Length: 373
Ligand code: ATP
Image (cartoon, rainbow, N blue to C red; front, side, top):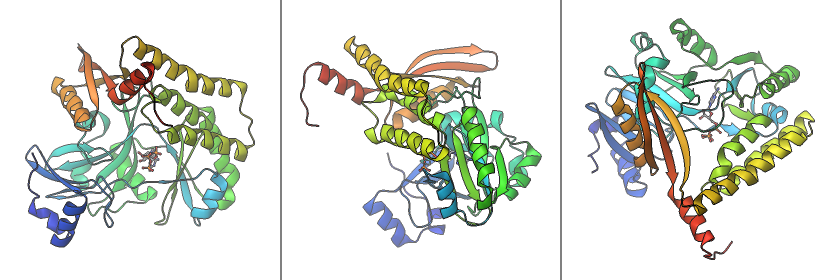
């Protein structure tokens, strides 16, 4: 059932804009959470990115998209004219944390309240931060094998999830500079992504050695953030391309082909710029991912199973896991709870994400149905 739009939305949008947004795209969605009314924007509009959440006491601005470059040096020269920091790009899922009327909430990139992240906020950051900085929004990545959204291997986090802050927005939605962010977050020991610099375009050797260090350590890559109000760019390591393939090849019938081509191209451009030849091992592992993982999935479907991924998450209260599964279902995903066990302070839940479209498609191919390609 849809809820009527609350009147505070007119602080941000004119009545004409609201009508236009609702008529054309149905882009404003009202939700109630613990007596708070929230309005989620599901498309970019004016200065507001998709995933912006408006509420009675302020705004949680959407996290903007980041331009990718495949040639690091030329990308930096093209987009970063002044000084910039090189920050580690960590590989998990994006979460924006805010405190509204005493309620700490974490919203996903799309602007939905994530029941899992929301119920784990107190484990990840010191909430006293908001006493001194009311209305601020901490943007970061939730990373680790206990993520309910990611299946990539994270070589640097052994268990559960960890939060790494990488941006901070003030009450007006303005992003603070990297310097300001460090100054404001540090007193609360809120963990931030690693950063190097400030650099300028004449420091290319130092920047490239950071990339090679990240490559050696199995890290994802970097986001380059200009000191002045310019847009950031992102660049990933060679090893992250392989880890992406290994995580996604089992879902070949579900994920658009462009995903795989993009990883291959990123790897090729990396080798070109860093003058690296792909090792036999890298080639073998890529081929294994591209062929053996989908092969295993086809065999499993032939034996009557579904295409699925396994997740294991820790929650403090049982109902947080039901909330998470409901949230995934609302986002159009099928899930199945496998087990829920109490261990010390946490409930450890195992669940499957089930891919019905991929299962159906593979089943039809196995039954000899034809298709145009
Ligand atoms: P996008 O929407 O930006 O095109 P995406 O959602 O496909 O991209 P990625 O390609 O992984 O995601 O890159 C952007 C994401 O990287 C950000 O949304 C953020 O969640 C994550 N990230 C990790 N580390 C950082 C960092 N240091 N600075 C900014 N973002 C970071």
